Length: 329
Image (cartoon, rainbow, N blue to C red; front, side, top):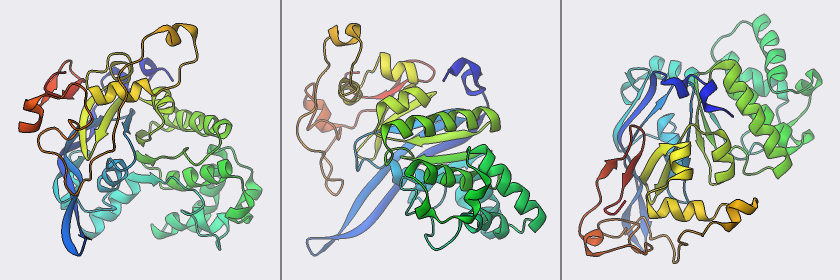
């Protein structure tokens, strides 16, 4: 995918702005109530037509953040501004209209569809929820199947009659039903075989170009992220530690955690294998119930010094799009 050929690569308008977003859960731990900080003080912007990817280890808060953006979860603090409107302030009818503009693609296509419903009903449900006339519903169903390269006879089948890749295409079709502008893709290919992953990724790229879609792409697969993304944000224990363009993150990472993630990407060419490996992580991710003081990454960072335990690093800007939260970046 070429960034130069997309509106986002040419400085498109800001479509979503996230300001100081946090999400906390109160849970029981060892018989006591404890606060789990799933997302902490996250800020970034997404421009129209681009793919903004979020990467990090399991449990870092990627999916929780994605759900907060679509208001499937209510943030504890902060703002989500979509097309100039504060999403948190929307009520009833206005929130319902937002649902048309922001859609979600979930990780497991089978569990996100009702196994007792035929595809016709699954795809028609969002259209009928918004009172689309029946003649238009039928035409739209045919168009949706065409967009995701499935045959018309798929409408009369049940989800279990499809392969994993075909089911994911159906989930994508359902997300497109109301002609959204912004789609949150939560690990949309991680449950698929590698060969099928490539087909679904190419489909997402084609749909973005054809329909001028904006993606928030959540993944732990850096190879997929590198192929799809315009910008990449790296999360660790609920916080964004580095944000930059795809080339900045993959070619000139500055945060030690980002460097460790890049070192884990398989290298196949002789040139890349000859390059020295960057640092590798040791130890486990700390519990979000009791994160370390200062920089949360310091317990696993080979560069940690006393200041890392004393104060949380402020985000520093190294280029218009490249921001790093590290004392020694």
